[in-house]
Length: 290
Ligand code: SF4
Image (cartoon, rainbow, N blue to C red; front, side, top):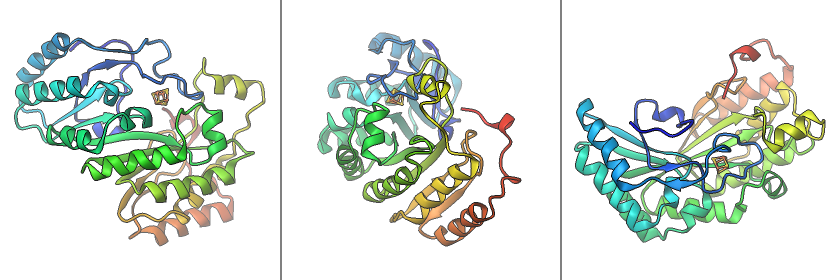
Protein backbone atom coordinates (compact mmCIF):
# COMPACT_ATOMS: atom_id res chain seq x y z
CA UNK A 1 0.00 0.00 0.00
CA UNK A 2 1.19 3.48 -0.82
CA UNK A 3 1.11 5.63 2.34
CA UNK A 4 2.48 9.18 2.37
CA UNK A 5 3.48 10.46 5.81
CA UNK A 6 1.74 9.86 9.12
CA UNK A 7 -1.53 7.92 8.83
CA UNK A 8 -4.20 8.15 11.52
CA UNK A 9 -7.68 6.66 11.87
CA UNK A 10 -10.50 6.66 14.44
CA UNK A 11 -10.20 3.92 17.11
CA UNK A 12 -13.31 2.20 15.74
CA UNK A 13 -11.60 1.73 12.36
CA UNK A 14 -8.85 -0.46 13.83
CA UNK A 15 -9.88 -3.45 11.69
CA UNK A 16 -10.42 -1.46 8.48
CA UNK A 17 -8.28 -1.32 5.39
CA UNK A 18 -6.73 2.16 5.45
CA UNK A 19 -6.92 3.48 1.92
CA UNK A 20 -5.18 6.80 1.43
CA UNK A 21 -7.16 8.76 -1.15
CA UNK A 22 -6.06 12.25 -0.08
CA UNK A 23 -2.84 13.45 1.53
CA UNK A 24 -3.21 15.86 4.45
CA UNK A 25 -6.18 17.98 5.45
CA UNK A 26 -7.83 20.58 3.23
CA UNK A 27 -8.27 22.90 6.25
CA UNK A 28 -5.03 22.24 8.17
CA UNK A 29 -5.37 25.29 10.42
CA UNK A 30 -6.78 24.09 13.74
CA UNK A 31 -4.59 25.56 16.47
CA UNK A 32 -4.27 22.32 18.45
CA UNK A 33 -3.72 19.89 15.55
CA UNK A 34 -0.31 18.86 14.33
CA UNK A 35 -1.33 15.74 12.44
CA UNK A 36 -0.98 16.99 8.89
CA UNK A 37 1.11 20.14 9.37
CA UNK A 38 3.93 18.75 7.27
CA UNK A 39 1.67 17.62 4.43
CA UNK A 40 0.48 19.75 1.55
CA UNK A 41 -3.11 18.76 0.76
CA UNK A 42 -3.72 16.84 -2.45
CA UNK A 43 -6.04 14.23 -3.87
CA UNK A 44 -4.19 11.10 -4.95
CA UNK A 45 -4.41 10.07 -8.61
CA UNK A 46 -7.03 7.41 -9.40
CA UNK A 47 -4.37 5.15 -10.85
CA UNK A 48 -2.40 5.13 -7.58
CA UNK A 49 -5.57 4.37 -5.58
CA UNK A 50 -6.44 1.54 -7.95
CA UNK A 51 -2.99 -0.02 -7.53
CA UNK A 52 -3.60 -0.08 -3.75
CA UNK A 53 -7.00 -1.68 -4.28
CA UNK A 54 -5.50 -4.37 -6.52
CA UNK A 55 -3.03 -5.18 -3.77
CA UNK A 56 -5.75 -5.13 -1.07
CA UNK A 57 -7.87 -7.54 -3.12
CA UNK A 58 -5.18 -10.19 -2.58
CA UNK A 59 -5.52 -9.96 1.25
CA UNK A 60 -8.75 -11.99 1.43
CA UNK A 61 -12.17 -10.66 2.40
CA UNK A 62 -12.11 -7.04 3.60
CA UNK A 63 -15.18 -5.87 5.48
CA UNK A 64 -14.39 -2.24 6.09
CA UNK A 65 -12.42 0.50 4.36
CA UNK A 66 -11.44 3.81 5.93
CA UNK A 67 -10.55 6.66 3.60
CA UNK A 68 -7.42 8.52 4.74
CA UNK A 69 -6.23 11.27 5.24
CA UNK A 70 -7.97 14.12 6.99
CA UNK A 71 -10.84 14.95 4.74
CA UNK A 72 -11.75 12.69 1.82
CA UNK A 73 -15.25 14.19 1.65
CA UNK A 74 -13.71 17.33 0.07
CA UNK A 75 -13.04 15.35 -3.12
CA UNK A 76 -15.32 16.69 -5.88
CA UNK A 77 -18.48 14.60 -6.06
CA UNK A 78 -18.01 12.78 -9.42
CA UNK A 79 -14.42 11.89 -8.51
CA UNK A 80 -15.44 10.62 -5.07
CA UNK A 81 -18.20 8.48 -6.59
CA UNK A 82 -15.62 7.08 -9.01
CA UNK A 83 -13.33 6.17 -6.09
CA UNK A 84 -16.16 4.49 -4.16
CA UNK A 85 -17.19 2.52 -7.25
CA UNK A 86 -13.58 1.43 -7.72
CA UNK A 87 -13.43 0.26 -4.09
CA UNK A 88 -16.63 -1.77 -4.48
CA UNK A 89 -15.43 -3.29 -7.74
CA UNK A 90 -12.13 -4.48 -6.24
CA UNK A 91 -13.43 -5.42 -2.80
CA UNK A 92 -16.81 -7.12 -3.22
CA UNK A 93 -18.68 -7.96 -0.04
CA UNK A 94 -17.62 -4.79 1.76
CA UNK A 95 -19.82 -3.83 4.74
CA UNK A 96 -18.89 -0.22 5.13
CA UNK A 97 -16.70 2.64 3.98
CA UNK A 98 -15.88 5.43 6.48
CA UNK A 99 -14.18 8.80 6.26
CA UNK A 100 -13.28 11.89 8.21
CA UNK A 101 -15.11 14.97 7.04
CA UNK A 102 -15.06 18.59 8.07
CA UNK A 103 -18.00 20.98 8.03
CA UNK A 104 -16.87 22.81 4.92
CA UNK A 105 -16.47 19.65 2.90
CA UNK A 106 -19.77 18.17 4.07
CA UNK A 107 -21.64 21.38 3.21
CA UNK A 108 -20.18 21.32 -0.30
CA UNK A 109 -22.36 18.24 -0.81
CA UNK A 110 -26.14 18.35 -1.12
CA UNK A 111 -28.31 15.82 0.69
CA UNK A 112 -28.87 14.13 -2.69
CA UNK A 113 -25.13 13.83 -3.26
CA UNK A 114 -24.61 12.48 0.25
CA UNK A 115 -27.36 9.93 -0.45
CA UNK A 116 -25.47 8.85 -3.57
CA UNK A 117 -22.31 8.40 -1.49
CA UNK A 118 -24.35 6.32 0.97
CA UNK A 119 -25.59 4.13 -1.88
CA UNK A 120 -21.97 3.58 -2.90
CA UNK A 121 -21.14 2.31 0.61
CA UNK A 122 -20.13 5.43 2.59
CA UNK A 123 -21.87 4.61 5.85
CA UNK A 124 -20.10 6.70 8.47
CA UNK A 125 -18.52 10.17 8.65
CA UNK A 126 -16.31 11.25 11.56
CA UNK A 127 -16.53 14.96 12.30
CA UNK A 128 -14.41 16.82 14.85
CA UNK A 129 -16.43 19.67 16.35
CA UNK A 130 -14.21 20.02 19.45
CA UNK A 131 -16.49 22.55 21.18
CA UNK A 132 -19.87 24.21 20.91
CA UNK A 133 -18.60 27.57 22.20
CA UNK A 134 -18.46 30.17 19.42
CA UNK A 135 -15.57 32.13 20.93
CA UNK A 136 -13.40 29.04 21.35
CA UNK A 137 -14.23 27.85 17.82
CA UNK A 138 -12.87 31.09 16.49
CA UNK A 139 -9.83 31.01 18.73
CA UNK A 140 -8.83 27.48 17.69
CA UNK A 141 -9.44 28.37 14.00
CA UNK A 142 -11.87 25.50 13.50
CA UNK A 143 -13.19 27.13 10.34
CA UNK A 144 -16.81 26.34 11.25
CA UNK A 145 -19.62 27.89 13.23
CA UNK A 146 -22.16 26.12 15.45
CA UNK A 147 -24.90 26.80 12.90
CA UNK A 148 -22.91 25.23 10.07
CA UNK A 149 -22.06 22.23 12.24
CA UNK A 150 -25.75 21.66 12.95
CA UNK A 151 -26.58 21.95 9.25
CA UNK A 152 -23.78 19.51 8.34
CA UNK A 153 -25.16 17.02 10.88
CA UNK A 154 -28.66 17.41 9.46
CA UNK A 155 -27.49 16.65 5.92
CA UNK A 156 -25.43 13.63 6.91
CA UNK A 157 -28.25 12.14 8.94
CA UNK A 158 -30.87 12.87 6.31
CA UNK A 159 -28.70 11.00 3.82
CA UNK A 160 -28.78 7.93 6.09
CA UNK A 161 -25.04 8.15 6.88
CA UNK A 162 -24.01 7.56 10.50
CA UNK A 163 -22.41 10.54 12.19
CA UNK A 164 -19.62 10.23 14.73
CA UNK A 165 -18.57 13.47 16.43
CA UNK A 166 -15.53 14.23 18.57
CA UNK A 167 -15.19 16.87 21.25
CA UNK A 168 -12.09 17.88 23.20
CA UNK A 169 -12.11 18.27 26.98
CA UNK A 170 -10.00 21.23 28.09
CA UNK A 171 -10.03 23.04 24.72
CA UNK A 172 -11.31 26.25 26.35
CA UNK A 173 -8.68 26.18 29.08
CA UNK A 174 -9.51 26.96 32.70
CA UNK A 175 -10.98 30.30 31.69
CA UNK A 176 -13.72 28.90 29.45
CA UNK A 177 -14.11 25.47 30.99
CA UNK A 178 -17.75 25.71 32.08
CA UNK A 179 -18.91 27.62 28.97
CA UNK A 180 -17.16 25.03 26.81
CA UNK A 181 -18.94 22.15 28.55
CA UNK A 182 -22.38 23.75 28.55
CA UNK A 183 -22.24 25.05 24.96
CA UNK A 184 -20.91 21.72 23.74
CA UNK A 185 -23.82 19.93 25.45
CA UNK A 186 -26.16 22.28 23.56
CA UNK A 187 -24.41 21.73 20.23
CA UNK A 188 -24.33 17.95 20.61
CA UNK A 189 -28.04 17.92 21.48
CA UNK A 190 -28.82 19.94 18.36
CA UNK A 191 -26.65 17.71 16.14
CA UNK A 192 -27.94 14.50 17.76
CA UNK A 193 -25.16 12.27 16.36
CA UNK A 194 -25.02 8.48 16.49
CA UNK A 195 -21.68 8.51 18.30
CA UNK A 196 -19.74 11.00 20.39
CA UNK A 197 -16.09 10.53 21.29
CA UNK A 198 -14.58 12.77 23.94
CA UNK A 199 -10.82 13.29 23.89
CA UNK A 200 -8.73 15.21 26.42
CA UNK A 201 -6.51 17.99 25.09
CA UNK A 202 -2.86 17.06 24.74
CA UNK A 203 -0.38 19.50 23.27
CA UNK A 204 1.49 18.82 20.07
CA UNK A 205 4.82 20.64 19.70
CA UNK A 206 4.86 23.01 16.74
CA UNK A 207 1.20 23.98 17.02
CA UNK A 208 -0.01 27.48 18.01
CA UNK A 209 -1.78 26.01 21.04
CA UNK A 210 1.43 24.40 22.27
CA UNK A 211 3.14 27.78 22.06
CA UNK A 212 0.32 29.40 24.06
CA UNK A 213 0.56 26.68 26.68
CA UNK A 214 4.34 26.94 26.98
CA UNK A 215 4.19 30.73 27.33
CA UNK A 216 1.46 30.52 30.00
CA UNK A 217 -1.19 32.21 27.85
CA UNK A 218 -3.28 29.05 27.94
CA UNK A 219 -3.92 27.25 31.22
CA UNK A 220 -5.35 23.74 31.25
CA UNK A 221 -8.00 22.67 33.75
CA UNK A 222 -6.75 20.16 36.34
CA UNK A 223 -7.80 16.48 36.22
CA UNK A 224 -11.02 17.10 38.13
CA UNK A 225 -11.71 20.06 35.84
CA UNK A 226 -11.62 17.74 32.79
CA UNK A 227 -14.04 15.33 34.45
CA UNK A 228 -16.33 18.21 35.43
CA UNK A 229 -16.52 19.14 31.72
CA UNK A 230 -17.38 15.57 30.79
CA UNK A 231 -19.97 15.43 33.56
CA UNK A 232 -21.62 18.69 32.45
CA UNK A 233 -21.60 17.70 28.78
CA UNK A 234 -23.39 14.44 29.49
CA UNK A 235 -25.72 15.81 32.18
CA UNK A 236 -26.91 18.68 29.96
CA UNK A 237 -27.18 16.94 26.60
CA UNK A 238 -30.22 15.23 25.13
CA UNK A 239 -29.83 12.56 22.47
CA UNK A 240 -32.33 10.30 20.76
CA UNK A 241 -29.91 7.37 20.78
CA UNK A 242 -26.19 7.98 21.04
CA UNK A 243 -23.18 5.90 22.00
CA UNK A 244 -20.98 8.25 24.06
CA UNK A 245 -17.40 7.18 24.74
CA UNK A 246 -14.43 8.69 26.49
CA UNK A 247 -12.28 5.58 26.15
CA UNK A 248 -9.61 7.29 24.00
CA UNK A 249 -6.10 6.98 25.49
CA UNK A 250 -5.93 10.73 26.17
CA UNK A 251 -8.72 10.57 28.77
CA UNK A 252 -8.42 10.20 32.53
CA UNK A 253 -11.75 8.41 33.06
CA UNK A 254 -13.06 6.01 30.41
CA UNK A 255 -16.82 6.08 29.92
CA UNK A 256 -18.88 4.02 27.49
CA UNK A 257 -22.59 4.65 27.62
CA UNK A 258 -25.68 4.40 25.49
CA UNK A 259 -27.54 7.68 26.01
CA UNK A 260 -30.14 8.47 27.16
CA UNK A 261 -30.64 4.90 28.49
CA UNK A 262 -27.56 4.94 30.75
CA UNK A 263 -27.42 8.66 31.39
CA UNK A 264 -28.37 8.61 35.08
CA UNK A 265 -25.77 5.98 35.89
CA UNK A 266 -22.93 7.84 34.12
CA UNK A 267 -23.90 11.24 35.50
CA UNK A 268 -23.94 9.77 38.98
CA UNK A 269 -20.51 8.18 38.54
CA UNK A 270 -18.86 11.32 37.13
CA UNK A 271 -20.63 13.59 39.63
CA UNK A 272 -19.31 11.50 42.52
CA UNK A 273 -15.72 11.78 41.20
CA UNK A 274 -16.04 15.56 40.83
CA UNK A 275 -17.64 16.02 44.24
CA UNK A 276 -15.05 13.89 46.04
CA UNK A 277 -12.18 15.44 44.06
CA UNK A 278 -10.77 11.93 43.95
CA UNK A 279 -8.16 11.32 41.24
CA UNK A 280 -6.94 7.94 42.56
CA UNK A 281 -8.86 5.83 40.00
CA UNK A 282 -7.83 7.96 37.02
CA UNK A 283 -5.58 6.81 34.18
CA UNK A 284 -1.97 7.65 35.14
CA UNK A 285 -0.17 10.26 33.07
CA UNK A 286 2.33 7.77 31.60
CA UNK A 287 -0.52 5.72 30.08
CA UNK A 288 -2.08 8.67 28.31
CA UNK A 289 -1.46 9.34 24.64
CA UNK A 290 -2.91 10.62 21.40
S1 SF4 B 1 -9.84 19.78 10.35
FE1 SF4 B 1 -9.15 18.01 11.59
S2 SF4 B 1 -7.29 17.27 10.57
FE2 SF4 B 1 -7.72 19.31 9.75
S3 SF4 B 1 -6.46 20.68 10.99
FE3 SF4 B 1 -8.50 20.59 11.96
S4 SF4 B 1 -8.36 18.93 13.48
FE4 SF4 B 1 -6.59 18.72 12.10
